[in-house]
Every structure is written in structure tokens, then in C-alpha cells.
Image: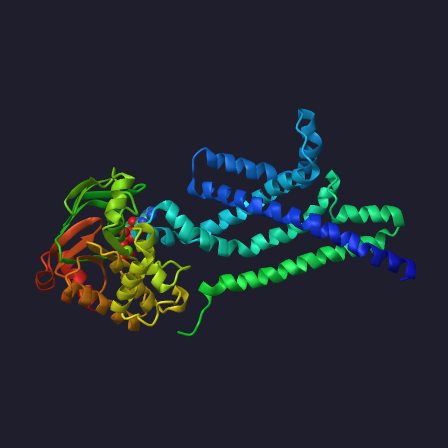
Length: 225
Length: 244
Ligand SMILES: Nc1ncnc2c1ncn2[C@@H]1O[C@H](COP(=O)(O)OP(=O)(O)OP(=O)(O)O)[C@@H](O)[C@H]1O
Ligand SMILES: [Mg+2]
């Protein structure tokens, strides 16, 4: 590698990492937090079989999972202004990622809820608890334990998917890199560099997932009695 | 104290309970016997509304309710005065032994935590698990789990406890510890309705026996009479068979 390329890489490192820390991460965290709320609510109304609302939840999951994320971003950011609804790039990205991720995570949470044995619910009824009390104290915690690894996967996927927000002018890591490439004409080195930074983020999250799983495992750990 | 009149239940075309009636007085230990598939579990589940009967009336603690039309409120009120011990324990997997016992007190009955913990510990002590308060179900043997389930049932101070084959999921060497806890409860005057295949328990501990077959009560009576002088041919055959 020649010295010019090396200098470009070292110069650009902070210029890429900084939008990573100030844009990519907040975009991921905020979107995912909202997605989790959407996912749990969507999964619960399906699990409980609330009539009407359940069909609505199914419809939402069907539409969102059946259309490309990129198309959803374009509809919200470039399409809605046609109706006079103009949303800034960052909030527009948050809305799309939250709604998109929410649909996928809803399926994860729903499957996890269904994997909790019915006996848990029945035992709850028999000690006098109400449906909502049992959901909150017994079924949901067990389901979230089951859902934790696949939800972590979704989170890691989301970090990388936020690069699509470059398409709606959110100045996150990938767009920052594109700009530097436009100035320096070193696409190979720079795109590998930004790829490595995404890899770094994912690795940190994977580590956090491990720690989280270990803590959640307490009640499943078999100890010699 | 508990009276069931003419309870009926079908699953689709399959008639599982064809009009069962029974009566349990305070302090009674009633054993329900019968071959597999005779509807014993279904009967217990209908009595605690885990399954909705198609017809029948229940008189519980002086209140009369329809078994197929009982409201959520009526069901909730009845459940707060009863307890259920399942064949496969059904302990809350995400709660420790002590939390399993206190959950129904703190959450369902809004009891102060400290008081609930005290009652919870007393219940666990009673079933011989004073050294297992903070163990999760996955860290307990089957017999210990079932004893936690019994402690959970006791803690809510129920008027009656329903047991559905409490020992049949256990290894033979573990059934003794559970049966002796139940025997102790019987001596203390706890009212119990017990579906069981343990003939020795039925004979020695129960005060009354109900023999079911094919969704009907074939014979019932006090335990001694039932075992020593069975009235119907079916009962004789069943007893002979289970003595082998
Ligand atoms: N949820 C259900 N749906 C359909 N059929 C059922 C259901 N529960 C029970 N049955 C049927 O009802 C009949 C009675 O079942 P039940 O479990 O009450 O019998 P049991 O007397 O408890 O038998 P065992 O001694 O084997 O536990 C069986 O034929 C069973 O297959
Ligand atoms: Mg049964």
C-alpha cells in the first residue's frame, strides 16, 4: 500500500468514525427502541387474539416484510412530500427503520410467546392472577429470554442497514465515506475501511449479546443439587 | 363445601364427561380413580375453569354458579379460594422456589412483600424445602418441584386443593416424598380432591373414593367400603388389575 493511500485512510478514519458515533449509533438505538415497543405490542395482540386488531397487526407485518426497506425509505422521504408531508432525513429514517424492524421483531416475539408452555399461563390462573398479570410477570419475561438471541441478530443487522439511510441524505458513516471517495478517488481502500468500522460495531454488539445471554441464563442454569 | 351437579363436556364429537356429579365436604380427601381416558383430568380442569364445561352447576362455599356461563369475575373469585397441583408441576420457570410461592400473594392478592415472604418461607418449610428458597425450578428434582407446587398451593390458604396425578410424572423413588406431604395435609384437615393412580394412597389417606369410567361415575363411597367390598363388576376388575 503506498503512502498516499495510507494517509487518506488515517485522515479519513475519524471523519468516518465520528458520523458513526453521532449518526449511525443514535439512528440504530432510537429506531430499535421504538421497534421493540411496536414488536411487543404487535406480538401481544396477535398472541391474545384481540379481534380486529389482530388482523391489523397481521396486515402490518405482511406489508412491511413483503416490501424492500429501500422502497419504504423512498416512499416516506421522497413520496410523502407529494401529499405535503415533509419529514427531515433523520426522523424519516427513524420512522422507517422502526416500522420495518418492528415487523420482523414482532414475528420473533410472537414465536417466543407461543413457545412458552400453556401450563405457565394455567398455573398463573390457578394462583389467582389475571391474564395481564400473568403476561407481564411470567409469560413475557420467559418469551423475551427466548427471543433475546434472534432479537440481537436483528439489532446487528440494523446497524448495517442504517447505511441505506445515505439514500435519503442522512449523513451517517456510509455517506461520509462516499463523500471522501468522491474527493480522493480511492473507493477500494475507503469502502473496505468503512466496512471494517461496521465490523467493529457488530463485534462489540456480539460481545454485549454474549454478556446479556449469560445474565439472562441464570434461571436455566443447571447446578448440581 | 363443593358440589358439582351434572357436569358435561365434549371435545368436538367426543363426549368426555357425560353428566358427572360429586360432593366434597370440608376436610374430605376425595380420591378420583379410573382408567386412562375416563375424563378425570378434564373433570378437574372444568372444576377450576381451565376448561369450559358445556353444562353443569357448581356450588362452592355457599355460592351457586353455572359451569358453562360463569363470568370472569365469578371464576376469578372461585380461583382465589382454590389451588391446583398439576401432574407436571408447572412451576414458573423464571421464578425461584420462594418467588413461585409468593407470586400469587403479592401480585394476585396484593399482599405486602414482607408478609408474603414470611408465608412463603413457612410453606416451603412445611414441605421440607427450607434449604431451597432461592433455587430455580431447573435446579430442583421432580419431587422437589412438586413439593414447591404444593407449597405454592398452600400459601394462598385455599378452601380446597385439586391434585391431578401429582406423582405420576415422578421417578418411583421420588413419589414417597410427595405422598407423605399430602398425607400430612390430610391429617391437618385440608380439603383435597385428588386424581390418582396410587392405590395405597387412595386406600389409606382418602376418606372417599370416586371411580370414573367413560365420562361417568361408576361407583363412589367411603374408601374402606370401596376397596374391601366393591359393588360393580367394573370396579372389581379395575381393582384386581391394579393390584397385580
Ligand atoms: N383438549 C382436548 N381436546 C380434545 N380431546 C381431549 C382434550 N383433552 C382431553 N381430551 C380427550 O378426552 C378424553 C379424556 O381425557 P382426560 O385427560 O380427561 O382423561 P384422564 O382420565 O385424565 O386420563 P389419564 O388417566 O390418562 O390422565 C381422552 O379421550 C382425551 O383424548
Ligand atoms: Mg389425566
